[in-house]
Every structure is written in structure tokens, then in C-alpha cells.
Length: 274
Image 1: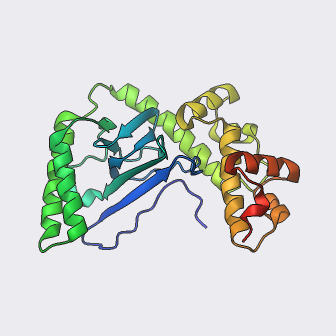
Image 2: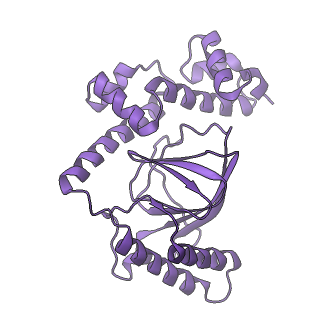
């Protein structure tokens, strides 16, 4: 099983490398340990409710009509602010726009696009074409993606960051990426905050402050949420009991595991067994 926070994309049509789908997140859905990143730019067009997107060191709240830009290699996570938030997700492989002479892999765009009629119109055409797949839809989609990238480049490039500032920001985010990968690979072991700090090479004081600034969770909170998610998956499979699931997810104290599990899911671990 791959426990990397690096999301690897699989394209259904290799000669048309675009991922497109409609997603929803619920207010009570426990997905608070789902930080990930990928090389390709990701665009989110919100059409329902309100959502919160954690992008690198930024927190963005989006509502109907907003577009959120997740930059290449930007660590991110999406959660609901209202009861439910719905959005279209568009991930475009670099080949699509590089064929037109654009290379935005090193570009940084503003994360939130509000009240932009032109950007929304382009996105709506892309949605319509990808949903209907009428004759020639690939050409229409590619043209509108190119126009959208040009629009982002002209009006939303984050030119206010110096090279030194960008380097410092990327170093901080890469530290958290390294920590999250360590948690994913070692959550079943008896790891501590000190172990994680040693792995990333920073002091406990600095790392804990940085971790919470990025994830909005303490290291222990994040580790518990991640472990509980994995434990629920094991319990739901019907192959493991509560004690076995707890031990496989790094809990040696069963009563503590049950308290933590109930805190995040609202019910005891035994209820997850089919």
C-alpha cells in the first residue's frame, strides 16, 4: 500500500490528460488528515455551500461562484464550512498547456478568485463540454483551459513574493510534507513527536508551531485522526476486531483508543464492525 502524501494521477484518456469530477464534502465528515499534493495545477469551482481550503500556509474560505487555485506541488486539504459544500474539480496535466508554450510548474497564483465573471464563464464552458462530450469537445476544452491559464497568468500571478520569500515558504511546506509522509509510513508504530522532529531535523518548538500553522492541528491531534481513520477502515472490513485494529494502528492502550475514536466519530469503535 502506498502511504505517500504525494497523489499520483491516473488519466483515463492518456492523450487527453485531464481529471474532472464533481465532489462534495460534509461538515461532519472526518477527512481532516487528508493533506496531499501533486505536480499538476488544480482548479476548484464552488457551486454549493461554503468550503475551507488549506493551501500551504494559507487558509481560504470559498462559496458559490468562487474559484480556488491549488498551485503545483502545494500541500492542500478541503473541508466543509456549511453543512455540505460542492465543487467541480479540474486537474490539468502540464502537457495540455505546455503544447501552447506555457510552463506554469514554477508559477504561483493567488489561491482565491472571487467575482470574476470571465474566469467563471470559461470554467462553465469546460464543465459543460466535459459533461456532454459533444463532437469536438476536446478542442473546446483545451482552448478554454488555455484561455483560463492566460487569465490566471495575467491577473492572478503572485508577483509580490521575492525569490527568497518563495524559497523560505517552500522549505517550510517541504518540512511538513516530510513529516506527513513519516506519519503515514510509521503510524502503526509507537512514534512520538520527538521521533517526527528528529526525522525532519527541526527543534520540537519550531516544528510544532509550523505543523499547526499548516494543518491547523497539533501533531498529536493529526496523528490520532489519521490513526482513527485507518482503524475505521480495518474495522469496516470485518476482518479485525477492536483490539486488533487498535494495535495495528499504533494504540497499545485500548481504553485510550476507544476514547479518541469516539471523540472523532461520535460512537465507539465496535459500531464500525459490520
